[in-house]
Length: 261
Length: 289
Image (cartoon, rainbow over all chains, first blue to last red; front, side, top):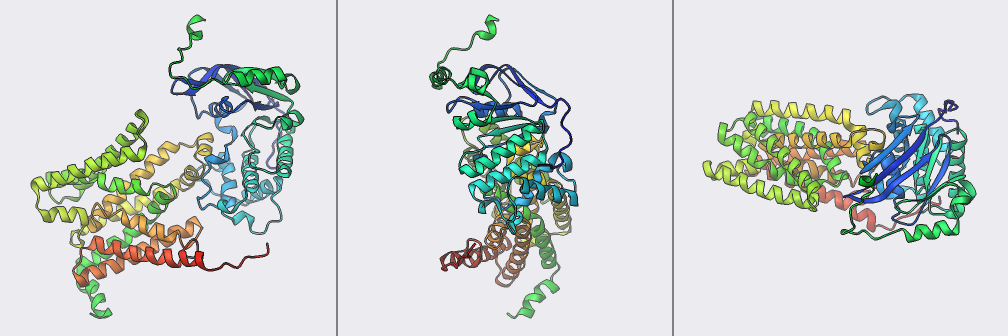
């Protein structure tokens, strides 16, 4: 897709977690995690339910403040990160047409009050075309609640494309989406990566990860493995990940690692 | 009583003209507040805030009599205090926002009634709770005008982030928009409108001019802009009908306006094309694609 794609040949954006502990109410969802997402890489984040995958992305965009350690973003500002939320976080009953929703991707360019120009309209149209939403008469004016799951996901991808971000975080982008849509949207993601953008995606479909993602991060409340997908998604690692999901424990002892160092 | 007589009510009596002007201006301001309250599922929050401002208004009334500015300052202070207290209780304890708001506004309402009845008469209580067209003097009219102007400007500036905060708050936060500030600004505008409405409608019912037209408009259109415009029109229509009925049958103006809005709401539920009952019952013809 060629929407406002300035040359990204300059170094690109990277993301790194340094001994980061992230969680809610003092209970870590991610415990002393160190992991890095180099500029221009394309990484899948996998792990069992409750492993802290979404938490990882939310911490990166600043929704959750880490309890300890640090999260470093290189090559772009935090507000320039493009983030695809899980569908459940969007209020689809709000009477907003597709066009208005997608156009929010231009926030960095137009802000809260800036007027829309013709080139913006064209960019929105191109973004919709780029995710396969072409030839649907009146589609831009349809309200969100009339869209199918696949269409809504494409619309979200269109908004993401408009953000023209150097770092793209996707939280379960392919849930409730059919295989054809997954294939097409996966091509879109691969194109973003080919343009030099750094991509991090939380996924459950290990087959898809093996086929399309060069790098993988396996987490289960802590880092299990990181690196080339084939080296990470081994039987031993996956078994280890399953074992490391412990229950939320109100009586769990406080972590002493901080003091010991 | 003929139509001409009803028209005469407005042409002959200055207080009726002032009440009409006040309610029409109020309609323009209250309608968008109501639309967003409804779409953000905060309808009952509006109601709770309407109750919550009473002790502030009452305190202003006790200190300075029927002085608009004193009552406004009191109402604003009480409204903000309750809103902040409720969100503090929500953040610091396991109690959810609706429960903490409900407990606080009930106490606030009770305090307000005690304050008024300690010094004033039953008539005063009635006026504050349910409004009176006679209360709309020139000062009140100017105040309503100021609040409406602030509201219109605030919505013009906040529209885009406010919509985003409703649809996809996570996105607004991610792009660096300050959702919390937007929310507080919106609540502030709402409290201002509640206070502006209380002379005509009373503290308890001024939220009605927000919610009922907004809820009615939802049954006629899916477009946010059209919904807001329609809500304004419904609110204005209710104001005219309610004031007329109030004059003709010697009814309290606030309840009369809200009942008029209620009738429009019932009609909307019945006949509205987007989700109305009749539209739903009618066998729908479907398109081929």
